[in-house]
Image 1: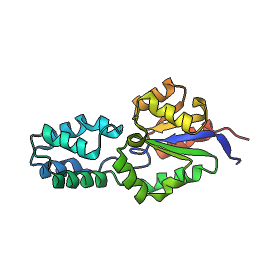
Image 2: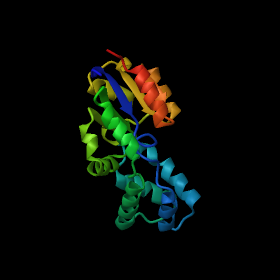
Image 3: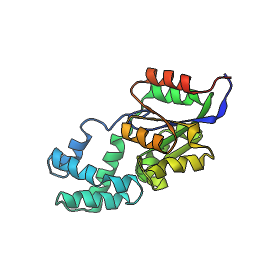
Length: 206
């Protein structure tokens, strides 16, 4: 099948190509902070958006989390939490990795992920196949996180394409709706088999 260099399949990372956070990770970090899992999870997620969007450094994020839990924010604790956090998001679905890489024979393939900058650096180092994609955009590095329209518009500009050239594949419906609102096509990811059918239908044939 001929490659169509206009068509771009834009993948989310976590929940699509990569696994969601490792089970038990938040509880492990909560224990390190001598606090309950519920209290830790609340602080962890409440302060996450500016970290994901590149407006806060890892140090600033973890300082906010620890202060919210009334715990001292010393450098050793921050670094231990930071590394545990990165590891908790490090797993990939090898079957999806194979599918994504193979798709490049038929279209351009890109990535748009909500991920802090230091997490992105670690993920790139551990998963060098990402460098083979046509473009990768990490929220912590581009200064915008989904569902902010700016995140999608960044990809459109960076890839010198039109919104209609994109098919966003994301496991969060709110992100797909936000992408569609600015002119991208979208698919809410559930299974690889369903995705393959959607992509096969969406890609132009020649």
